[in-house]
Image (cartoon, rainbow, N blue to C red; front, side, top):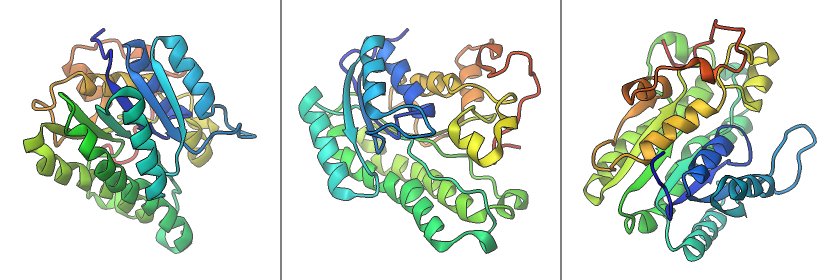
Length: 274
């Protein structure tokens, strides 16, 4: 495993799901992990808090900073980034993992719900990237990873839940634009998206528990994120990457290890993936 010792990774929405799995993967490589999420108290239905993940990070071999963060609040984000840099001596990577989802058509999407998705999925990516920038400039290998999809303009993806789609494509547009803006500063900006559905609470809530058997575990996204973070920022930037494609390119051949249910080989393609 390539070493991330001394590197500081700031992960939004890291108290569960994909964010938690990325935190643990990087911790096993020796990284300092900032668990930035709203979940500082146990949820009645969902496992994990910033504090429980911090304990897991330390047990995995990394250093941890649990920080209650609402990515919609500029002051909170600025304070969290400063605390991270003061604690660990800088920030080397930002992973914009926090997200809001509601798979409803335009007619049935309350504007308040759209505002929430826009503020978390798109606005927060710009905000967190802006605030992280002064710290990333000082890193020898600065990275921003946005969990957003390839931009697929096939009408079948635009029709069923366009409010959510706009907010996720907004993240991907930011990836492409920020990559060019930050290229001369040796800060890589890439998007990462799963080829198949991933077994998380969000998938279960929006699509139903029946989707989980045909999904992969969050470990596949963690392994793909790790590949990005351990790549020279000058060599990989401005890409809208799929986890499976990236891992195959890097030599992974065993994808059965990622199946959430080993008896189910019929995997569900994720949104926006043809």
